[in-house]
Image 1 (spheres, rainbow, N blue to C red):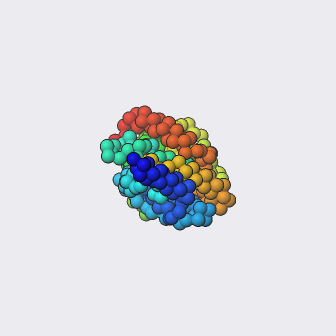
Image 2 (cartoon, rainbow, N blue to C red):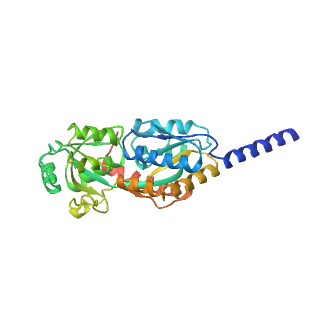
Image 3 (cartoon, one colour):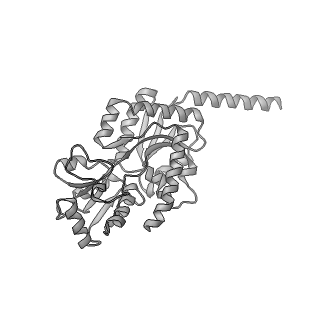
Length: 318
């Protein structure tokens, strides 16, 4: 009995030391969408800053597909020690599970919230071949041609997908959905004229500045400073269309408190770095207010319940 107690005490002390010394080795960060999108770019920006401040490499790896679940799987299966994280758009955690139901993997149970980073506005962009030059012209054309225009998104159940379906309902139009495995691939096909438009999360802004795409409206609270003449949807009387919940870091459920708090605090510091803030601003990402892991978890629960009601209203199915 004495030997057993000593073994348990030793194990507890070892676990405590492990947690307090986190990170003592490289941290794997999985991005559950394709390269080139806002999640991928911001993960790499933050990964570089976290490596600098925490003294260990943050190795970013893209695992797109499966409506975000392909990226969730290795984190759900990992040891709960804080060395395998996922950086995910909020839609894959708080929206997609209402559409893609996996009895073997519920991200709200298999993962634990660590740190929120930011949210995006969406930019309504059309290919130049679409015969419209303003939002009013676009609206008239879409209403006159139901189902003719197709739009690309980072995937089924993502924030842009939900946003366009809300837009369809509020504007009285019918746009046809084409899902991709990330915002980057959707942008590539938009530039190539394969799809007609996208509610882009910010990765296409440079292309719009270069005249390769036409920005006609913004699904967000304010106009973009580089496009002062482009109106918001609310200015046109269309409400309830937004970029969705916060992007953020998640760890394996059961991860000790110490790694969660250290990571949360490191992310909060990184988000105050001028270089990081400038990069986020370039991508038109609105920074999240600092949230503790517990506050972020409460936010995830609240948004999850909100979308549980909205998804059936929109009639969205896999």
